[in-house]
View (cartoon, rainbow, N blue to C red):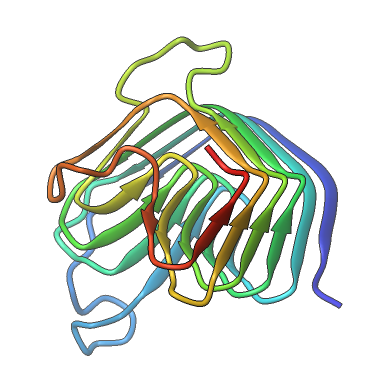
Amino acid sequence: DGTITDCEIINSSVTLPSKSETDGAGTGDAYYGIAGAVADNRAAVRNVKVKNFTLSLSSTSSNDYIACLVGQNRGTVEKSSVSGLKITVGGINHYVGGLVGYNAATVTGCAVDMAGDNNTTNNIYGGGYVGGLVGYNESAAEIKNSSVTGSVTSAQFASSNRYNMYGTAENSN
């Protein structure tokens, strides 16, 4: 059924080379999911833990969904966590989050502790929609009973300290 459950990803890193606007689809408007576990979730991700994860993308393109757990969520992400992360993304107009880059569905009971045991600063840096838990939350999407600690930096939008909310957030901080 496409469900990922009860997994741990520990001490991993992803470094991607620079890509241009037309890599892949050739249209200049391609969207890519880049994540530690799932690029594009259309089912369920449950009880997955990511610890000490580093992702680096030197990009001149835009429109990437980037996160430690799920790049783009169109299903359910629940009871999952990320701790000790470092995401650095070049370019603009990306959707970058600690847990989910772009959320179009449901995130519930999740947590992000940016520093974890690493105690690093500038844990997430990128151009575009940047958030500690979710980079961008679509209008019909939900975030429930979830939390984030740490700080993020957006080279494009200065007010991105947790998540860009257009849907609903319930009991989340």
